[in-house]
Image: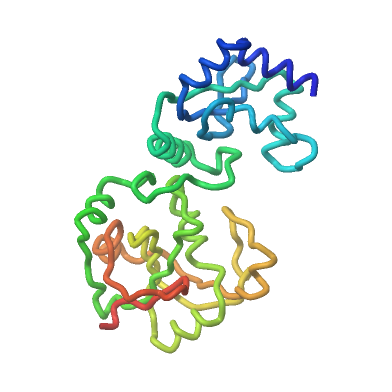
Length: 266
């Protein structure tokens, strides 16, 4: 506790009315917890928003509440390498929320100690060519010869993903229902779809038990494996097919809560 109090007074060397006025004048703001390296660079590890002295809240309960973030912060405090920066201030709550979310998406949540991304569909990192389709509501119809299944990866997809990460969260792991649906309808292609936009298209060769193939960019959740026991074997579709759909919004029915929906059958 003594170390925490000393750190707070070092980071915020104000008292009384001066401290009160400073915190009031900040209004809503976005802050960044930083790891100070040997070259005195301030490397972001956590992004947040708040008012008054919200930026100190993560210094509480570091020992009593075990978490990866708390352990990281505790180690940095012990090594005298923790910094807190104000990224933007004098903001409205709505603007602060937008900036926080944009920063998390820019840095990549996998590079931070944040557990969730920010809120709001209009403040998610998205390539311009995809955004034009979203805002203009431009859609394309999947041709019958390219019929398949749109696999909805909204929950797991991150804007920093490359080809491998996108493929591995699309190919598995799924319940038997998607396998039965694909086989019954002779679905030949899998469309990795995030918020309506096709991120990539794959040829489905076959469905196999989950874990048959090696995963390089993710770990399979043991709890999920109890009910989701299948993955597909496949590869990227030919470029002439991908060029028709990647980055675009394909016409599809509602999924009604399922993580997949058939496309190209109308």
